[in-house]
Image 1 (cartoon, rainbow over the protein chains, first blue to last red):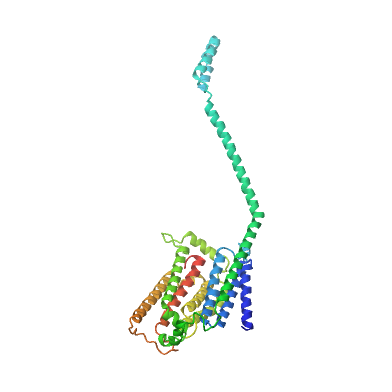
Image 2: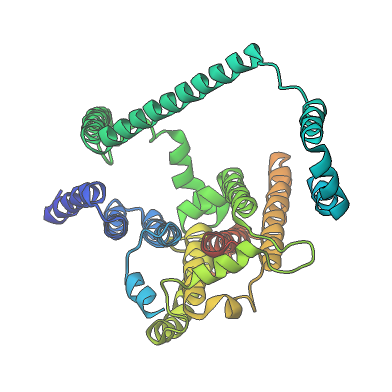
Length: 88
Length: 339
């Protein structure tokens, strides 16, 4: 248990708290991606590179993409849509 | 009647008659009118009572509606002000209690678990010892994880792939928007297509440029991971997920028209069908031969070479294709309801 491990685990806890506590769904989704990425690094430290690859590909990649699409579907992403509507 | 009478009255002859018979005629008219007009209606007490009752009822009904509306309004106001506060406080309290309970349970569980890497863990029994000692000889896979999940426990992996395929089929049933009977696109499909580009520009230069550079690299990396599943970390599932990520990037950058040139619903169906059938048949053959102690006739090759470890590489390819197709179709269905 060296310094890097402790730092990674602390970041994991911070990320999980931030996912639950942020109001903006988009922000919490990006924090969730960061959580998956840190988790992948931790899998590497735990000597399971197979899981690390899967975690990075599925947890940080595919799941987040599906979440993004869902957020777009339910109109939860407030980008410059008002700007676009003003143009129309 | 009155018109006819007035015509008749205005004639000079009639005027003379009237002048002559003055009194009689007036009386006659009066009598005739009295006889011809219908008798005045009898006053119906029941009807009147009923009408009164109905009026009272309607008034009461209106009053009750008004009271109900007032109640609803009060309830709404309460929900917006104090009730909302109370409910949100209740939610916070419940969430805190549940979260603390989960924390305590999980920490307790973790405290009861054996230390990481402890040789005395229940998991370190003869099964894992056998996998580690004889895995290379029996499966020919340098990557012991691939040897485990695609040889010793290939049946589980078949189940996993099938679960993924069934999930994709369920999502297809739920989210797919089909054409109508004449083959025209349905109203929902048009709406979904117009909604699809609500937040994104149609031809984003930056996105397309980066996709041009990144998509081949991502696809190559995914294929590398799939093909080297028996030699290095990775395998069908993770490689397939990476390939599907590359395909999704291409779809996001270039749209459904270009992606539809090489990937349609038919592609998904046939690729999934052939991969799953190949997997099932290959493993059925291997299980049948292995269970009966017969030589399977599949060469294991030299460990470490790319063409080695028997069925593991083809199985990895099959799993990777299923996973890549399924993830891509998931994305397309979530986004537009079709490919």
